Image (cartoon, rainbow, N blue to C red; front, side, top):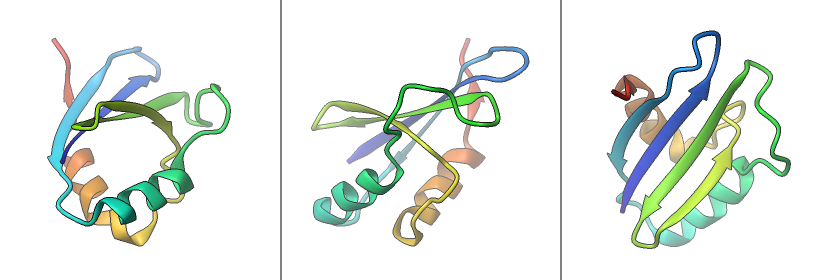
Length: 87
């Protein structure tokens, strides 16, 4: 499943985007996403807002990056390494 991470906010207010593939079980994905989903619409403490978009099924979820569960660690390492400023 294709996963897109959008990072917005910060001092300059630029949007950064990265894509990666989740190849693990869908059940694990859903379970871990519930753990990092933001319950309120406020920005994170660092002034950034992170939104994960999945393709097939199409869904956008605002997340907190403070406590990424171990099964998602490699995926998020790849996403953060590939963040690029959106033109």
